[in-house]
Image (cartoon, rainbow, N blue to C red; front, side, top):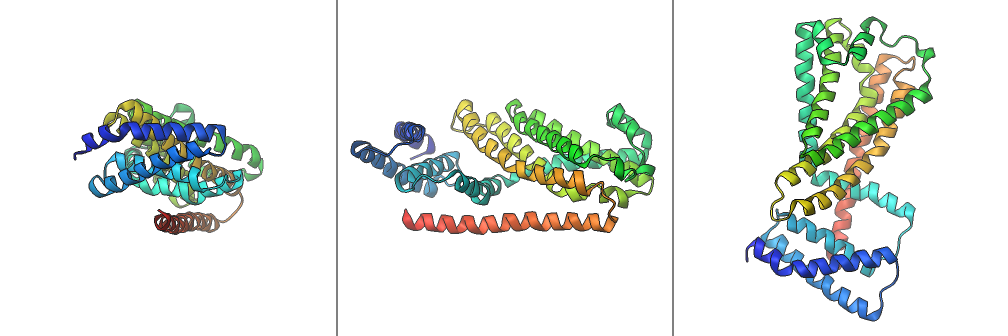
Length: 326
């Protein structure tokens, strides 16, 4: 049986199970005996279809779709309603990390686009510092003064600066995510343009022999901040790709499915932006040694990698338990 015939033959059952999940989840009530029998039958069929799809179509979208469908049905049948706190904990401990691991290639593409823009701008400004004015907005370019890097710490309102930075970065991430609706073109522009801004500034400070100080003011918050932007950008790029090449499904279906996953990835980046904003508002402008600021960057990187590693381990344990009960 080829994949198109497989989908066509079983699509009605999957749609019926989807409708049942949506109805029961919306009304938040227990199943009656008749509903339980029908729901259980549809769930078992979908589980069998998932097993078949994993065997014969392991890399196709239908396998991921069935995996999500069966998981939702399983939760309604066998799990008690969980508290909001537990839902949040589960999302950040496993769900977000699982989505990130599934879509890491798109995140890498977003990072490559940012890096390409940054490297091109860096080399351009290194060749001629006046190129800075053609690469950056006029107001930004005119406000840059390498000789005053880190000056006037006491004049900075850290709370206001932190809130402003968090708002701006979340807006950038949202635009990068929403850019997926343009087949990813807006997302590509945002990734490259943000890379150009950082690269142009890095080139200017290199030209003035202030690179060590410049990066000391960038990397403490930049490690977390850029990773969050790459994740949001990857979500937008993947949405755009699914719209451009929907495969066996319609573009409308792919938009609905991938938009949900991308929104979850975007939500997962919000705590990262909050952390980055706090660091950028309170630590970056503080009167600390440059070495101390680099140490903060290393600690944030270790913390983020540890978070991903622990989440991956927990995800494997949960998958193993689910396999035993299926």
